[in-house]
Length: 349
Ligand SMILES: Nc1ncnc2c1ncn2[C@@H]1O[C@H](COP(=O)(O)OP(=O)(O)OP(=O)(O)O)[C@@H](O)[C@H]1O
Ligand SMILES: [Mg+2]
Image (tube, rainbow, N blue to C red; front, top):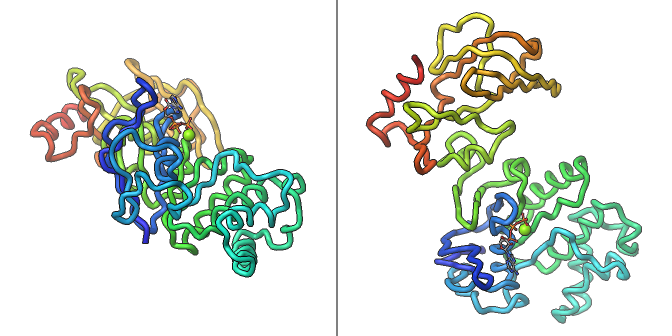
């Protein structure tokens, strides 16, 4: 059982205010991903949980216990860093054993844990090797094993896959998901990659400039974003966002929810006529840029037969249209705003 809670946490570096009165509860046993653009404060938050970059004010709690002033070694948390910092002169076994020796875990217990962990991450048979005799993925596993062997209550990972090539990253991604299922420990995973966040998370905490923009499941974040930032952070190509209703509102729809058709469709909530500007065939899907006159939009379609220069109808069904308030970029949901229906009616015509 390990729940992490931030209560009114602020972090300043001199006069630079990185995080201001942040509140967040990271649920026990869940795979939580902190995601957001570079510099938004992800590593800063993770370091506060680890105890290696204390909060300027506020509290960090582990299972309800205030750990704000507890030193890193006494927190039952383990951190895996971006550059995985394994010792090049030590063998795999020594690397994994290092933290345990420091904590004066007896030899027999150390051996038992090393055997168990190395089987779990698939390093058994490689324990005598030095890091330079390992592949990138195997080195990554050493870093993981070193964190796991401490049997922490909370696992902290800061972009642990960013040094791996695309194929290995995908493979390690599913291994980490499996590992989490197996350990049932609280995972807090930092990435700036929305695809990684969507693929791995039970809960995504989306950050921007030190603030939480939305905290939700991947499904909820994709289908039901709270604001323009969340809507545009998740998904490629980026969600189309266009001003409507005398510029007071923004209409959003995802490229994959647009239908292209040579003939005017019967059923739609949003309809425009445009011309294909560019075409990128990606295999199962083709990405088109479409000129609508006032604006251009992106479309992702399973239809690869549309050509550059073709004129086309562009339509979107009602349940794929999202409305935002232009002034504060917040989502406007049906029921939130008495004008919702009339705005959508105006969009249709
Ligand atoms: N020691 C420091 N002194 C001053 N500013 C710092 C310090 N450490 C971090 N910052 C600033 O705090 C902000 C948040 O940094 P942080 O490392 O948490 O970002 P991040 O979300 O992890 O970004 P990335 O995805 O690039 O790793 C950044 O603007 C950064 O410049
Ligand atoms: Mg970082």
